[in-house]
Length: 243
Length: 243
DNA sequence: GAGTGGTCTAGACCACCCC
DNA sequence: GGGTGGTCTAGACCACTCT
Image (tube, rainbow over all chains, first blue to last red; front, side):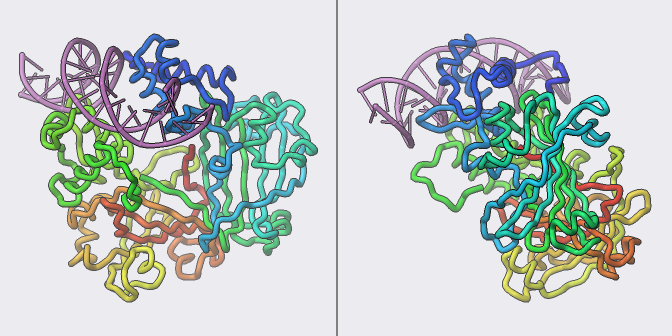
């Protein structure tokens, strides 16, 4: 996480973490793959198994790797059932678990507006793709999303690609562009529905909505997605835990 | 966390975790105290230092214990500078860091309404204390909180006690009632300001506010506080991270 | 210098998965 | 049965804090 600070002393397992992360960045092991066994990595890096173990433990705690006893250690993927909901914090109040369906409104190429350019660390006016979509639960639209990704990392993205893919957006990014989201920061506000969004979500203009701004990061803490979600929260809540 | 499931096999370090937690529940070590050294605990529990270490590692990851190299391991406390802001997720948009001041409106004894009784696992109509307060940043009120705690655990709580204490509410609970908050779950919605709250927050009636419902837990995952916060989020955001 | 937590190693054995 | 991760141990040494 703090690869910028350079402590006077860096433990071995931390260096191993960096080496593993570099292999992930380089695509040596892709999401869903098994990485080599602890023993293999130990001899590769010329350290003891315990040291590799500690490095993997930390990466597993960050949800970058997934350990499965008796099988091996895998690169986390949004393609799996368990992970597909990892970043979805909107839940029904009645406790029922339900997956939303998405309906894409448009996919366009744009110049990055200031807000997303800054957060994605792009120069002003850099090319982005803008995805607009609606998430519905039981055919009732509840979330309107506007998603910005740098054009350079998502060359060739278009409406047909997105629409023909079944699965979560992050699983799509992973499969088609090799970009795995591993972490995100969200800033949440309450806002009034604009007339456009009110129509899409079937509420009256000015209705209070949850505005969820997200920046998502891939390996090496590189920001690669900005999005703004507007959520109708009458029967849904944004759920989070802290300790 | 999952003390309810009983796996066929329970590792030693997990049993040590439970023993340590029991000492925390029993008050053998209080928030701010140093617990015995790893070596001492190892001989007390008749296990190796490495096993105690793993147990403490996990409790430290849950922010229940705090390790300080060269000094010892301490029980986490909301009384310290670092921890006082642990559960405060509202931040200024301009990035400036500022601590809110609180103004108490009332402290009353009530019968628990259904919503908090259920979440605090109390019988309907059980006694609670209800604290109403306003959080201000630079003298501008931004959050209105209504806080419910079971009367049985907070015997004798009254307005004067609360008002005369300087420090965060959780540090007050810790110091005066020996109850340490270690974890919380929040459910967030966007709502319209009622006329009462609108006056307190100096916004117009119907203005969109962030409604943050929280249940906080003490050792052993016992729920001991329910609160509802209503936040004016024009210049503030609720910030969270996920991975 | 003494005491604490932090790292690293090596080896034994256990639980789990799959062939 | 063989391979994987998971636990537990014992010991050496390092980094940090305080006296």
